[in-house]
Amino acid sequence: MSILLVHEMGHFLAGRRRHLDVTPPYFIPAIPPVGTFGAFIKIRSLIPDRQSLIEVGAAGPVFGAILAIPLLFIGISQSDFRMGPQPDGSGLSFGTSIILELACLIWFGKFSFESVIILHPIAIAAWFGLFVTAMNLLPMGQLDGGHVIYALFGPKVARNVSYVVFVALLPLGYFTWPGWIIFASLSLVIGLKHPPPIDSHTAPSARGRVLAWTAIALFFLTFVPTPITVF
Image 1 (cartoon, rainbow, N blue to C red):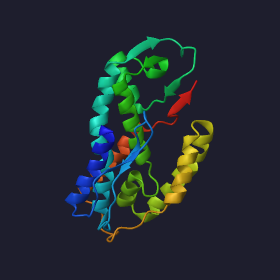
Image 2 (image 1 turned 45 degrees about the horizontal axis):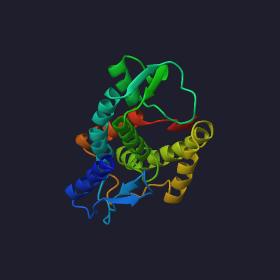
Image 3 (image 1 turned 30 degrees about the vertical axis):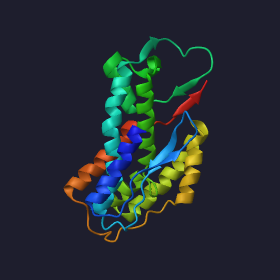
Image 4 (image 1 turned 135 degrees about the horizontal axis):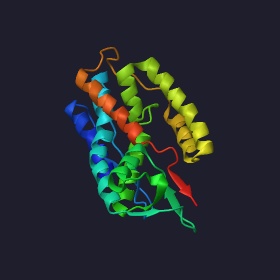
């Protein structure tokens, strides 16, 4: 919940900095032990330009990652590393990402798929925080990643990328994790087309482009093709 709060506060502070009418973060309650289904803010005013769109869209994932990535490394350092195959029995296996593999390589000197890692609770919390970050950064519709792609490349590229990602989620959901199909279906309800800001022509500043590319790099570092496997 702390990672989610920092994520949403990133959106909130960026919106306030741009003099937008934004609400404080709201958490969606869930049955324990899940605690929450996520958090959100509501932007009541129109986005004035592409620079504002980048700042508001990218600030949340970047702020959340600034907290979650150090927590991931701390959690990995406290986790139990065991060589050998997956243990017998039933349970859950969390999927891996580039940032998780880097943490394992730095701390243990090996990749996670060469071993079994019993994650410390801090690492599990960070994993979920970064998983939510990656889902928000999917470059489609009105997700954070959709904001970034629209602001960086314009409406035509944003629309095409959004459709490509939607189509890619379907086989990914069939072959790896069914949740991607559900997520793709929800994206249809939200809409794959991004609404334009008031000024959709003025390109973002150099600082804005750096922030946008940072968010894009963060997506590739945190994306988990197969988030959860039941064995």
